[in-house]
Length: 426
Image 1 (spheres, one colour):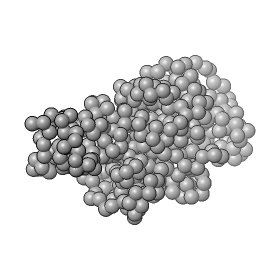
Image 2: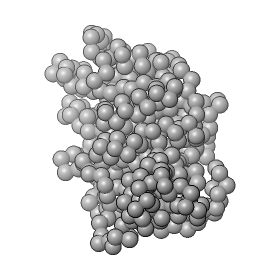
Image 3: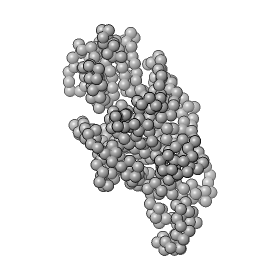
């Protein structure tokens, strides 16, 4: 679009929200023989050029000096236009200018956030994720996960506060064990909801002899560039990040996405998983390791969705997006409801009840045992907890016997191994 517009004498500018995307934009233009002028910190751009690429925050700081410059642009393209960062520039745009917003997730919600319909007149959705996979433009996702007890977590806005829960339950160890089991030596991008969680799981990778690094908003600019260069050029590298590489980051070689967090935000979920969807001559699929029930809550990344410029309403916010899905209890694969045998490990998939997330109800003691122990047994089978450690923590013999049954221990386990646990010695 830009190439044809410039041929007709137009003047264009592309806005992006993060400096990592400036580099990507530059390389994309080169493929079409275009040389944009960049508006960024530390440089004085040539405003007479016909094509510019600008960081939105940099432009905002200079908007009083660049107001006339922007009014003269005839085409404006906004990358990741669903983000609220770009709202502030619309008052400086001429009504005669053609504005195109680009995003994979055109959704906004929140009382104090303007709707996309306040800025755009039409939404064009000619193709969906599933179509792009079938056409060979996006890689296919293979999803694995472990259900966790969401009623144990407090919610902050659209995110759950997982830091304390994940740390106390040593979830970081399970992340590494599952990565080694399912996706060893594959280039991996991990998303954490906070800096401490990202650092903690990164350290666990390193302790297991796996090359890994961490990056967050406070990482110095030179160090951030250094780490991203390392990640993009190192086979089997693991990069743990918090709030940096969520939207727009383009590294086609990423083979694994780890969701070490829980969110209720559909755009955030789709953007995170989408970082692994780029194809290469040798890559047609990627793996998602979900440690936050995100797929159970929001549906598969590749599901067809109908978008709107209007904000998500409270009613829509409460609907069940995910629908009924199945989970292989042997390997942790997340599967379609029609699946009878797991395509990854061959296990028979039995019918299971649809999970109710964070719904409180009056439970008897035995029901509480059963639900809690089923979760712990599932985590143990997926290497997220140690079965013997669970037994050491139990104080009721009936509860201990139920856990042994859920774990599939031998009927003679209590007789042969019981002396090792206080619960059986009482």
